Image 1 (spheres, rainbow, N blue to C red):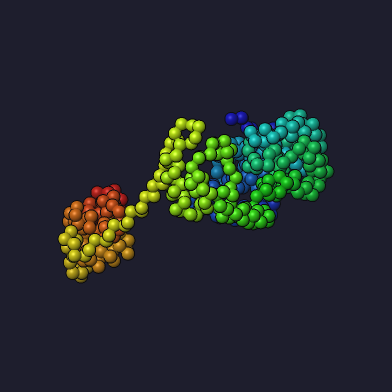
Image 2: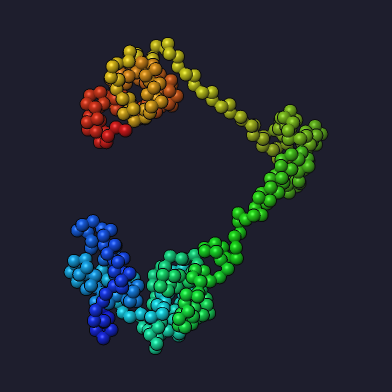
Length: 388
């Protein structure tokens, strides 16, 4: 990291004081922090001092240290650490910060620095002869998509060319910087594509409608109306008249399609080796959902009458209000009941709730045993966390 030192004594003013408005602002800023933590306001106050005078002076550092009851060296450490603080006088009308990070460098930031060298000063941080302009190279300024760019004050100027930067510098040198619109300097809205949007435009619904109509026409067209792929056109025709006739049936005729598939399996293509049989369409029937076990099933866990103080079964991970109500309906009210379920009983409840193995995955029995033995304290001891 570069060594950063305060400006020489010849540049340092004898004293520093916030303006009336800034003094009020500084007091309010300090009051935002709790008692004993007012030193946290050091960065905002240093930045406000820089905005007022253009750079951070030794007198400003000492004044802020006194306001925050800090040692001078502590405020000096902050000011010299962060490169956002200017420790030497900068241009009174503009200090141009040129981004030199990779995206801007690839898009021509070196040419922008050459402009600064020719129009301001050959060396960074040095002011022009009038003392109104200065410049420096900085790291990423956060508008990479609009590279290359510079920052002047709090405003960024993006999508720059060397010619446009020369114009901007000339306007600032004349004291009319406020007349330049910040942001992108080309035909672009913020970070949108150059020249305007290319997708999701007002024409988009019409394009989608035309595509939808074309798709519908393609789907509804019979098979023999479809264009023949080059690979099929080169293939010799089958001599089986019945097969060729079947090929001309609409795709919506299932009987003809089945007949065609069977013929294709049995009929080799003339002039070539026997064709491999076409794969049969294996339509796998969807497995029917397992039937809900009956309440009279022998594996149903034994229920009990609702006790005066039933356990809160929702403490078991995986049990919500709805599941708790269902368990209560079949006579399950206590942790001890759940803790005593055997494998067959767990499978019955899992099927009754249509859980597909959730009771085993969440280990209801282990959870219930801990809760039945010692409540929340035992649960924490076993699982290392509170029950939900």
